[in-house]
Image (cartoon, rainbow, N blue to C red; front, side, top):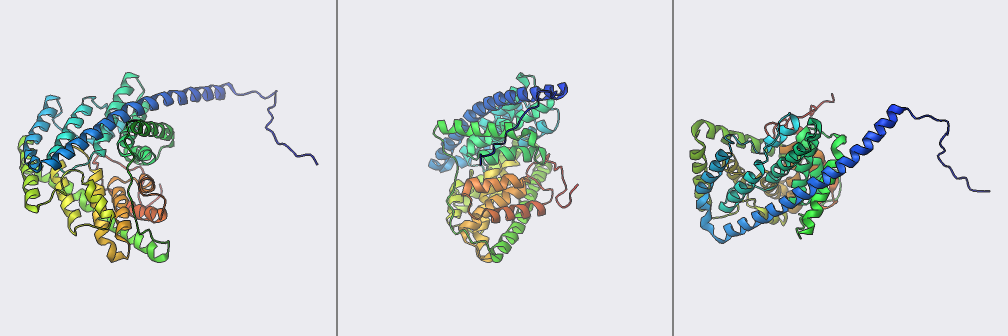
Length: 423
């Protein structure tokens, strides 16, 4: 018997509707255009994010070499406020400014990129508790928004290219292209919009490849003690997700409380940032450790090895709130990882989990709670720690997302759906 070959045959008499043909042709051109935009944004933002990471690393090493640099925080703070005032920005909004550009018909001034670049370097150089990935979001978003305006893109396309820049900045600096591409959409839109999935992912991948050409490796961590999937470990991950949700609320509320205190008692921005710098410097000296200055990546690594001080997560919350709400720059993402990792390491024995695994669980669980980005958080778990016990990471993140309510690191973030009911 001869084999039967099935082939798609086109009826020669079939007439393709002209309107449909025009739409298909338009979409083909649209895809090609977004290939160009995404690659351009990926290369530019990836290069700048890589250079930014190198500058921050150099500043961090200088601070470690000279402990007394922490007492220069007030001076660095004055410089930061003066730089923003000289640029005509009296109320800097950080990442919120970029998110507003996605949601509303507002552009992002290109001068935001060098401002956040320099001010983040000064913050890290003198020991402010901040990260760098949040700054990379701002840098990438502002540059991409500027590129989009040069191409005279429509408002909808300008929103898309801004998200591409956010994804590229995050991916180029942190090395998680899959999570970065999804995170840019989730945090900016409040949900996933598949229409922008392709350009965001392409831009994110190009930025990562660009960073690798400069010899910058992707971020990854070593985790031990992955548990088997059982009813007991499932229950432990669920309970830990609840704890991450509560911790995310505490973190966000602390940020808002410190912000309120500054606004009511230290209204002058120069006085506010000087006082904050002195408080952080004095607290650092009294505690006798530099663990809470800068991003704290070394502490995260120790937590993933099963070592953490019992109150480390609370100190990091306070140091980060005092730093960022006063006007110092950087980001909240790596401090979030610090808080989640140290909390997980300390809470692990209570839940019968390995401290290393619980630290990893805390990193992504808390990240999900404060950013309201569950899909990106799950993908981040995969890219940072591998695929082991991914279902437990997913469970923890989903519970943290649901129970954290509408608290967020970003005050302008809005969710398109209720967390408890389908609409």
